[in-house]
Length: 591
Ligand code: SF4
Image 1 (spheres, protein in one colour):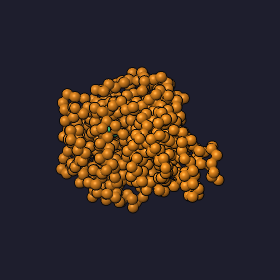
Image 2 (tube, protein in one colour):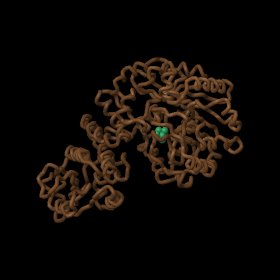
Image 3 (cartoon, protein in one colour):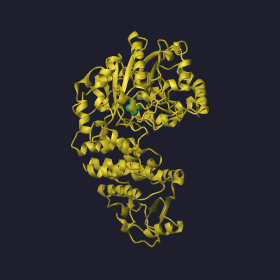
Image 4 (cartoon, rainbow, N blue to C red):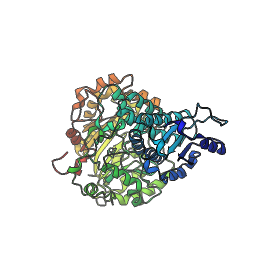
């Protein structure tokens, strides 16, 4: 089918009567008539998505299903459907994406958006092939790229379509064509976890390097790499973010919120529609809301195998598809971003919560979160800011005690600059409850530390670390961890940092790649992220991490580069017992 088969007059007549070209115009063309489904502007998104969802031809056209999924912000599904459309086409109908931007038309203005024609006439459905359809998808991406306005909807569409194009072109080995589509869409959706995963996989493929199994589905068919695994986190975890948004894993690994604790009751959040969808994605092997590029459980491959799971909640989910839960075991409390520092990788200026917001959050802690804490096994507090700068965080630390929370252990995350002997003496109720203190450090020397821990004093920090090292030595805290986010300003101190950690009796030094948490533009981020293969210092970085020091038991890392001390699945699982203990969910003997 090509544009000559289309009866264009009804399209042009409709555009003329509207007075401008609508953002999406789908003409359903039989042998005798043309009916339209139209989205004039992005303000009509919800109504348009409903109309699309009700179309009788929806089930016959993976393209329309892809469009519908993209409109519903289900980008992974959109990519799958668009890929399916490229490979197999429609069933009994045929959709074509047309470009009239350079054609002569009877209209007084140029047509900047694609026209979508859904042919229902059997005669018109014969001639398409996969390559024609993939070109149609690329056409859609290019045309929306060339326009402006309706940004939210345009970017949404491009993200889903680019993922589909990446899968198709990657599937047939045309990696450059796949990358061209991904790069266009990344201009508009730079934080898309799936586009970033596809980009990384394509970089590897274009460089002739092996693509990890878990990433192959972003540039081809789903190879089922995760089908036999399950991640316990979404069944066990309840993370509270700075605005009260609730997540089932850490926000940059699984950024889809499931509710908001400021405005909803805990029970409604626990088993919301979004929460159930995320848990379902653990069972169908897609892990489609997870960041396949950054999640260390996926990178290191230590997720439990389904057949080894003994935990009753997970077993019920695996065996019977039950997705609801009635309690959680882990809470990551990131409810307050207040901090005495302003680290450049985290924020552009110092953040201190407004008093009214701070007080409202403290009330939520007392009335909504404390009841959950009585059944909790692990509380992580507070990765969003500094625990000793935050009134809601302090409220939790003041209220918990062994009697009310019999099974609870606490992991404290701190920059250590306020972690003094005096502060510690004010919290006698925590005695025996603190499992670990994790100190985010990012430097092993005064100049680097003070650059990356803006507003901090090296001397105060070292004094407090000596106090913490003493707490570790006496057993008052059971673990001390020091973390290091590697980037251009500090990667040459990575080796030194291992020794620095030993000086304070650290059980672990943790190396993690830089992430863009919103403090950087994407250009700034790329200029700092030495772990990216196109960074000018990437080879020097690879030379640093090849050092054998990173193979020591004290080191935990997220390296997956050639020549780096690779952690075996067993080793990674064993070391992670002390951070996220995945092995607690499986029976004895299995990792
Ligand atoms: S697989 Fe990774 S991102 Fe997904 S829920 Fe588990 S830990 Fe989070």
